[in-house]
Amino acid sequence: MDEEQKTLGLSNVNHLEKLYNGWFLDYASYTILDRAVPYFEDGLKPVQRRILHTMYEMHDGSFHKVAGIVGDTMHYHPHGDASIYTALVNMGQKNLLIEPQGNWGNPLTGDEAAAPRYIEGKLSEFALDVMFNPETTEWIPNYDGRSKEPVTLPAKFPILLAQGVDGIAVGLSTTILPHNFKELCQASIDYLRGRKFTLYPDFYTGGIIDVSEYNDGERGGRLKVRAKIEKLDNKTLVIREIPFGTTTDSLIDSIVAANDKGKIKIKQIVDHTTENVEIQIHLQAGSDPQVVMDALYAFTDCQTTLAANSCVIIDKKPRFSNTTELLKLSTDHTVHLLDWELDNELKHLQDQWHMRTSGT
Image (cartoon, rainbow, N blue to C red; front, side):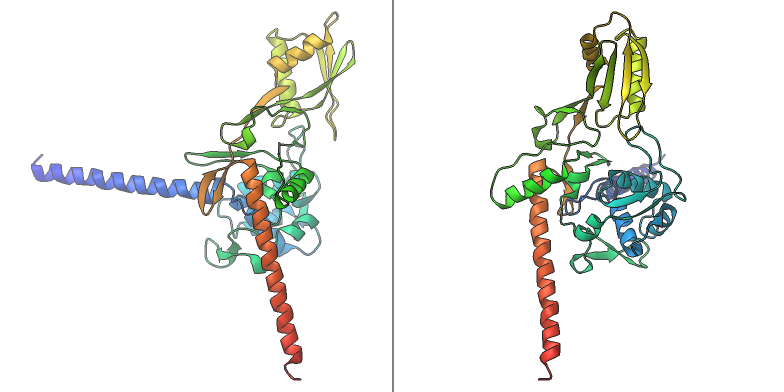
C-alpha cells in the first residue's frame, strides 16, 4: 500500500467517525426531547400529548373506539399503533385525563386491557377544563407537514406530579412518582401565599411508605414501599394493599418463590382480588403470624424500593430537578396561562365593544 492509499484510508476513517458521532448525538437528542422525557409545561411525553390532542379534535361528548383514536393519532405520531395503544391504556387506567369505558385492564392484578376495537374512551371533564385552549397553544407542523400539533398543551395543573412518569432515553432516564391530587392543589395554594409545603408520593395501590431517603424526588432519592398486611386470625394473614410497581400476580409469585426456598412457611395462598386487593395467606400449623409477616417484608415483594429521578425538559433541554421545584414551575406556568387567557378575553370583549359602537 503506497502513502497515498494510506492517507486516503485514514481520511475515510476520520470522516466516518465524525459522521457516527454526529448521527449518534442527533439520535440521543431525538429520544430525549421527542420520545422519552416529559416537558414540565404539561407533564406529557410526545405520544401522550398527541393522543390527547387527537382526542380533543375528535371530541363531541360521546365515547370513541380506542382503535379509532389510535388510528387518528398516527397522523401525528409516526411510531406505530402499538406504542400509541399502550400509552393510551396507561393514561386511561389513571382515570384523570381520559374517561374509560369497557375492559381497560386492571393495574392491580396486571390483567391486560381488551383489544382496541372493543373498548372506548373520551376526554374527562377535568382534561377539557385544564388542558386545552387553542389561543394559548404554540403550534408546529406535524411530521409530514400536513397539519399542526401543539408543542405543549396549556395545562393549568401539575399533571407531571399527578400522573407520574417513567422514561428511558439515551444516556439518561426519568422516574417521577405520582402524587395526591388534593395535596398538589394545597401545595400550589401554599406556594402562591408564600408558605412552605412538603410533597410526598401517593399511590393508587395504597401501601405504607418510608420517605426518610426520598430527598424531595431528586436524583438518587428513594423510598421504601410496603404492602398492608393484616392478621385475620392466628392462622391467616390478608394483604389488602400492595406496593406500587407490583401486581397481585407478581406479589403472589414472589411469596411462592420465598416459600419454595424455605424463607417463609405457608400452607396456601388464595387471591380474592376484584376491585380491591385481598390476598389471603393461610399459615402452617404452629406458625407465628408476626414472624411470618416480618419474613414477608424481608424476603418477598411485600416490601420494595423505588428510586426517584426527576428529569424533565425545561427550556428545550433535559434538566434534573426535584418535586418542590416542579410544583413551583407548574404553578408559575398556570398563572402565566391564566393571565394570557384573561388578556385574550379582554381583547375579544374590546373588539366586540368597538364593533357595536363604531356606528354611533
